[in-house]
Amino acid sequence: MEAELAALEARVETLIAFTRELQEANDILRRELLALQERNRELNGRVMQATARLDALISKVHE
Image (cartoon, rainbow, N blue to C red; front, side, top):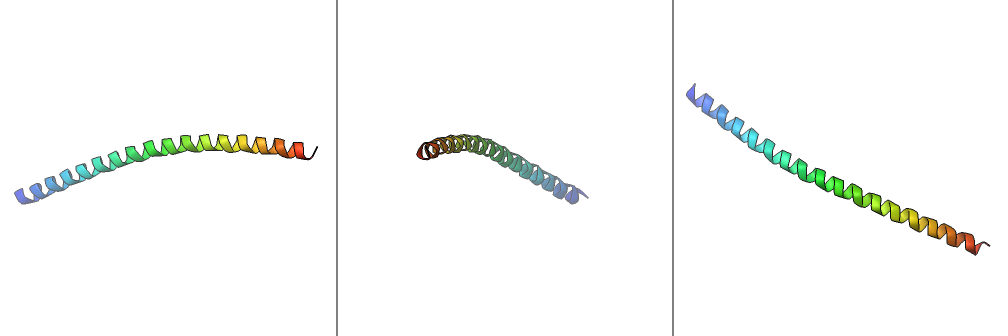
């Protein structure tokens, strides 16, 4: 019985450690996702500006 409890305790400790590692990895991934989403918004804004400039240039060419 004592050995079973010790084995169970070791397994619980291992699972707790693994859970903490996963939480840390998840936090890192969340921060990376937020940074990439912000970068995506910036790039979309630049694409929209470039599209507007190109449309204006095309309009001038057709005048």
